[in-house]
Image (tube, rainbow, N blue to C red; front, top):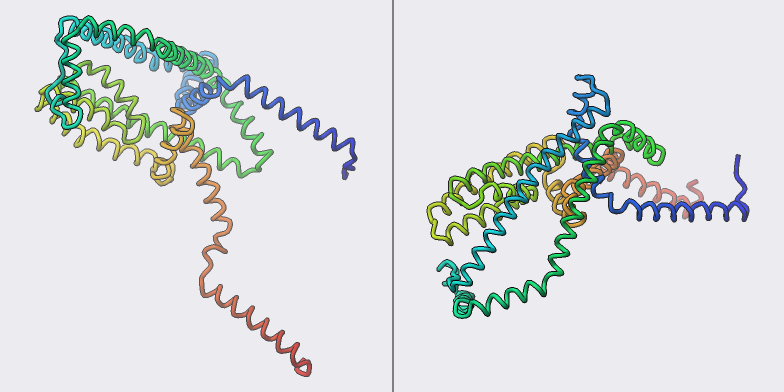
Length: 385
């Protein structure tokens, strides 16, 4: 039945579309804060879902109990190292602050000779140290005034910290429901997309799943292996707070080719403090051992599982990090994987045209030219026809 597009029908459709757009904008405003936590929860739930299925299907726990076990386990895996890192960081910061104040008070603030002898800024560093040690009370007063004038930045940092902790708690709470209702949710999303795009969406969703799992495992395993190896190097080189440095290295290692900046900075610090053998040893350990982990595990796990060139994954990771923040480490490669899947599908559908032999194309063109020439001759010489 063909619908008559009368004025009333057009107005009704426009009003419906307007209301839907307004509803979408309002819904986005409501859930905007929870989008990133939900993405993190979805990623964690997807890559660990086989463990949930083990508890639910093999051990025969209910969906609620299995989801609770998984959520509590992941909360402990994230929360315990986070609490330890915050405690160690607080202790280190307090120790550094106390030592700095004490050195200023006694007029013995100093830096390594390697810094004071730098070509450009070495003399400026010496002049600053001389002024600080000459007037410790004035330096402390200036330091207190500087802190008072920059308290706003401390408030901003605390707001960011509390916001991040709130998002983490929201992600862990959402994780429970993704475990429990994840299968039903995936079926609904798949059917909704199938209604819009068609059956080809199944291949795209499979590509998203494979890429997500491979990227998470590739980035996570690489970062964990590099952080543990770097921790061994920190311990034997005598670096301060090796556990804290290991946790920091793990966070930096999540970014491709970011690990050398972690162990390289520690190596330079050791050299600046006069520990030449330890600094050189840590640098060699980083170049010969730690860096090779990134070159081996990441390409094998990611490219081997997804059949996607590693350069695409690399661009996706860095581009996603720039566009979406930390969660973009995983969103970027997935977006490019979908684009690559669409590209490959289009190429496959038109491969007979794109990859047709050149001789065949030339023959077709020659036949067309001959046909046009024959028509021209017939029009000029009607007797031939």
